[in-house]
Image 1 (cartoon, helix red, strand yellow):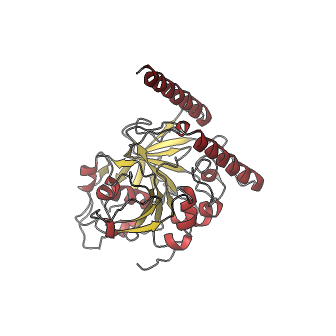
Image 2 (cartoon, rainbow, N blue to C red):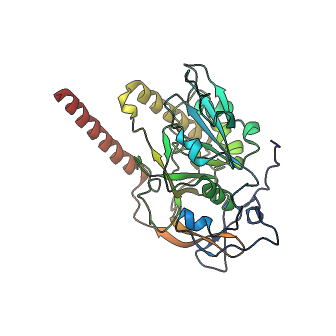
Image 3 (cartoon, one colour):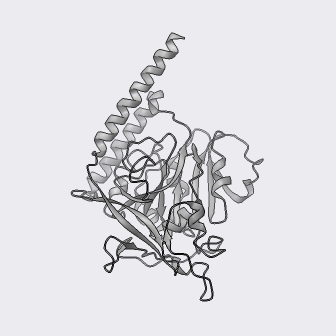
Length: 354
């Protein structure tokens, strides 16, 4: 694959359209408006996104067949990984990198030859340590976005990888995740498919979770990757601290094209893992505090948007809805942790009673 030149820098990830109140127009460096379209191509059917089927029907045939730049989805994977991700997301507009950490044989999978496989010795670094070691700026240079997903995610009927990539590129989203449908943690507001107005599909949120984040190449290579610790595994602190440093995009987003969380295992089931994760969280906090690189979040307002396409296939965010009365994220996490602890205590009692 040819390594493409980096797109020009933008002053902001989304440009406000002064001619229409509440509408953010695509300010993408990826020349999305001309994707797969020529002057003789038929126009799009204007309208708001309401469903995957309806949305695809608004674009000329072939519009989603090949993007100017692909995205890459990297997954640290053991033998229990959710193989459905590759089958349902597809490999037309995405490349996959699997970083394996056990001896499971993947060669029988029909898509094995379509993915890049990196074998990591058992007992070596896991998860975010692997991202630091293997998702280097040179490796991700051909892609518009880098997705680093857990291996316990499933693809539900409302997710469409091509539409997700279309929106990431059209609106130059720097930090974004699909909302989580089934078994959402709900620790961070706006990341669960049950959050926010259901007729809006793109949301400004306080924190993108480390379960299913995607990053623009620019943010990953120039901002986040240099701050990652190769010895860390949990990712604790990446979302709370590293997504909020001054070189990060001003807005983080979630998109209502939900994935499902299949494995609801808790760190509390393994005290050693929880202790290590808390230690990594403290180390990330100390890093950003010692360097003084955190952005002030005072007075931040969050909005949700509909997605609109016009007759020239230009995408816009419209119908902005201001989200008010949000519970501070620390309180949400504390409440979620209490619920998890209560659930685990009930399970222990039920097991003991058997």
